[in-house]
Amino acid sequence: MSGRRTLDPYAVLGVARDATPLQVARAHRRLAKAHHPDLHEGAAQAAERMRDINEAWAVLSNPVRRVDYDRDHPSSGTPSSGHWGASRSPIQPASPSSTRTWATWRATAAETRAAPRTVRQPGEVPTPRTRRPPRPAPPEPTFRDSGWAAVLVGAVFLALLLGAIVVGRLSI
Image (cartoon, rainbow, N blue to C red; front, side, top):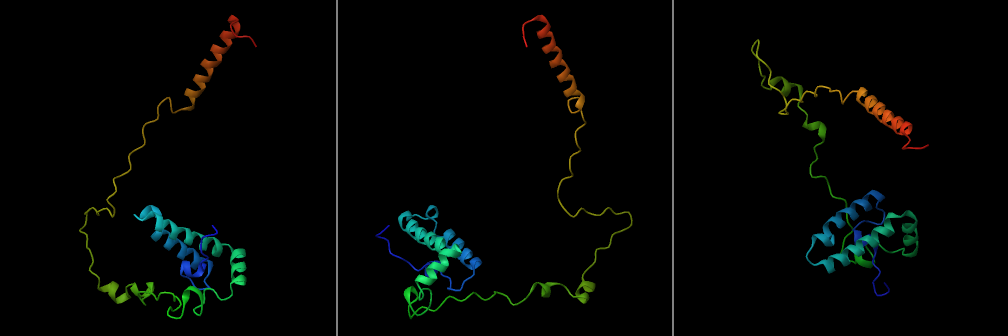
């Protein structure tokens, strides 16, 4: 591996230096899905890219290795040096696609009162809410399903064993 170049793991995974372990894990998973060699025609290039991604993951996923790397490379992963260069801005987390929260999607009381109602006539059978077939009835228990079948088999086996001992064919 002496011919391989040393890459900045933060730049390879595309995360900031102060990224949380969860952010690092998500970046690794996203890149691994995108660059896995089994999913691409150019397996040699994809394998090389995947090797870089896994090496970066090996450094940043282990807290001890990450601290050692940060201590040995104090200027890596910052916008002022290394892979980031002057023309590349640091990665910012994506803003949410919608500013609405789950609570705003709920209906108000007035909307609920104004919703159309289904009125059933007396004696009308309500329609089922799901289209699942009804569960089949369990089969009728037979003699084999009872515990007596096992007792009977054990008694027959014991009788055969004792008969073999009495006849003398089996010695203890």
